[in-house]
Length: 157
Image (tube, rainbow, N blue to C red; front, side, top):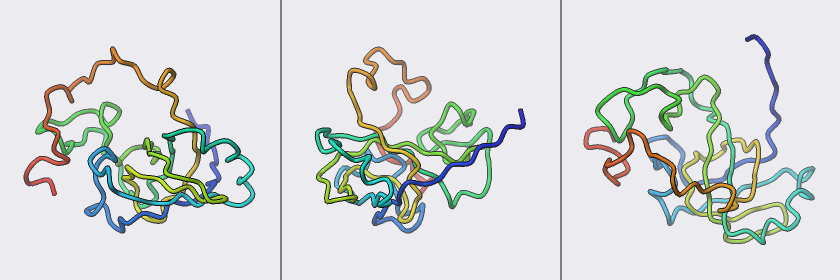
């Protein structure tokens, strides 16, 4: 497979996290983290009716990740797993996803909570979180089952 695609960011995340050490591994571990998503003016019309949703799915680029690890050691386990069975950022395509709570919209700026992205991360898409489409109550958690609710295992800070 040699196809390449280009993606144009639609905006940028303004978050309180400057480094990966400051950021939570998932937004659920930082319910009070507040950030903004600044959508480029040329895409502002695409935000029509977005304030009707309480949560959004945000796809963004892990633009500061420099290496790929196909079998990383995740924060919540002592065993290596395939990168596609983890949420590890060292992926072949550095695309991340987070579900955020939408607090409010001011023009082309979205005020959100539950953020795990670094400040300045490029946003590539925003979608409404729709529980009947996006939640699967019978989904299996795989190796995450029974793991601690802590953000990181001791020694992995």
